[in-house]
Image (cartoon, rainbow, N blue to C red; front, side):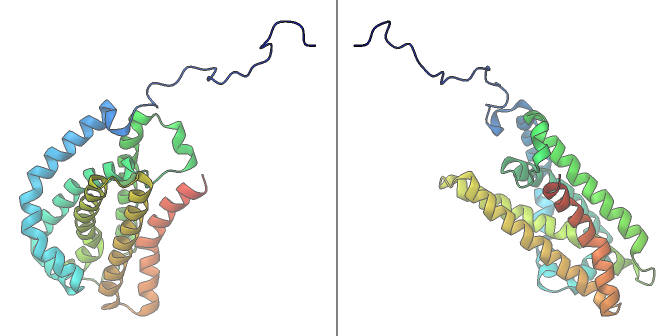
Length: 236
């Protein structure tokens, strides 16, 4: 026979600490992200006419490596391409942050409201490292058009990647695809465009350098900055 007050044992199922109202917000609910999205949209709209005008030349670069050299030969087209790549980089970085394309373990220490600005900063550092390396290692025997093609072909593929990745993410979310599926597709697309850019850069260098020398230039100019970015996500 049992005696005493019933229900003397129990388990506390509620959390003992109050929830973090900031971390419980969705990505699009954060004020910082809303401001950045509006700013990126405004900049993109300002350059959309230029991007459309550049599309035939960008497709030419994607179809054959000499297209990159021809594009650099036109100073106005090359300048417009570089500015358009900067305009495209902002929405592309926001897309990458929204779907967590870059999430090392230490990223949890960054407040959610500062995640997107931090990602934009990391992309800026990546470009600065790449630019510094190109200033050091690129052979001075290349003429200005070929040097520009080697340095800025990545900008061409940034624009193409931005257009297709933004469109893909939009279509997948319209059909209610889960975030993880969108993330995997975007990662594959980002890797594909980087490899395509690497191939075109290698072809430009290979037309003026030996095979082994071309590999060394590619390792220093393209693979080293990208490798540092990947290692920062894997090792830290």
